Image 1 (cartoon, protein in one colour):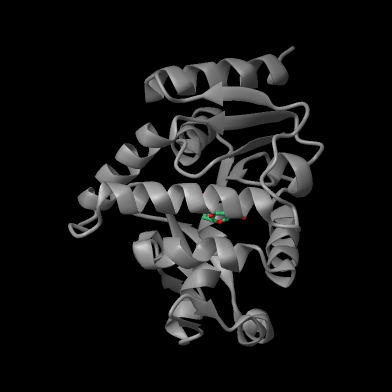
Image 2 (cartoon, protein in one colour):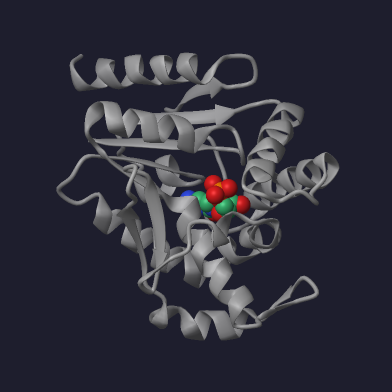
Length: 226
Ligand code: DC
């Protein structure tokens, strides 16, 4: 069984996806982390300069990029790039600024979508992203599309960045980055962020994470045992 959770940036997709996966004993796959790892490679290799991305260099390098996940000591999901845990390095504003651009490159999408589809072979999973219900698993048994008010999303994301030690970032910077990423994700030609016709909408603006989880779990149980 595949549960696909798509939606705008910072709408709480990964929070609910992780809890669902734990409750149902499914694997959780954070596809945003995969695009973030590719963006991190571009930054580390010096292919991002003043907002310009050397797309050709990155695409040539794709065969050398290996993306994986492992469990941390508290059971948390850790992103692993070529054998190195990069969980903290991929959650920075520097990565936020370039990741939508990286994720709009068709060759990048082809490679990551193929890997995501392989992950779904023979095992049940909860996968979150932007194109899971439309492109990666159009046959997913349950599709959820998450939204939330942009001011609320920005405030939540700012609090998260502050907890991680980024004291310099402002609310306005976070908000404008979110809106810019939404626009870029919706506007790209290759598999844009789109609500699947058969997705159930979950607006996370004014409900608690517990309520979001219970609503999603009820939907999953409906599908598992109709
Ligand atoms: O979910 P996130 O914020 O970690 O995702 C980071 C970026 O990756 C986001 O701006 C859009 C892109 N992305 C995508 O294009 N397709 C996915 N399936 C997941 C993420």
